[in-house]
Image 1 (cartoon, rainbow, N blue to C red):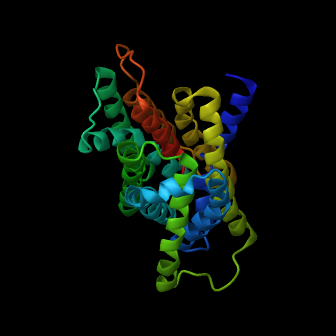
Image 2: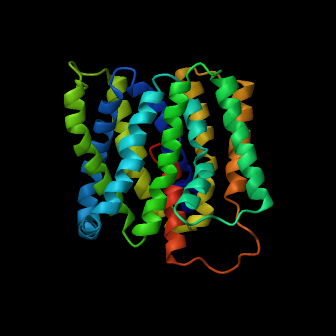
Length: 311
């Protein structure tokens, strides 16, 4: 890896590992829906001009139906459920549970008619991943808040389904344009929702909460996507996928250092099982040597992005 590639890799690993920390800070004073509105709105304001400059808006808007479906399952529902779950469980635990997205991706591929050819190692990965999730739920959370666990489960499914929609129906669309439009649509959806539910704050939030929203929008959303595009161009989508296994570790350390969240033996065990399972379930068969076609390449890039964005 080049020096530039290493710098991009570290920067993106941090940008996609810290959202859980800042979501936890933001929901301490703001309603989850307001957090989603502020984050998606500010990120859209930053990315829409870039997408317009790159002439990526028109082709995305022409395919509005799959883009709308993607927006709902990737941002509108998951971001709200994730923010809501973090009012109940530690940010590090949320980050670890989200790392099970590759496991859900296997089921999503089957439902969409693109089942993966599973090897023995892949099945072992599913078993280890499920054991890791069970460890986190049964010992780390202790079954004390199954509502939050169910909310994170919805997030995991959404994060797995979103990129699959893009890969199946609109693999040719430019990534910056898709992200900019999706963020803008999500913000528009949440304006009336927040107004109807009385989620607008009656007073200015504290400085830490304002900083958290800005970081979520600018660094974890807008900048992270630009970094992702640059990193894929520098080292390719396959090597870039390793970043998936960095983000949960960043989430654990960020929660422990800045929020004082406990790192227990069950945290470490769950982390090891989930990450090992995710690695094995996404490991390709060695006997597949043909290069991936355009659809498979786009699917790989987008799944890598959305395993960690939102996130």
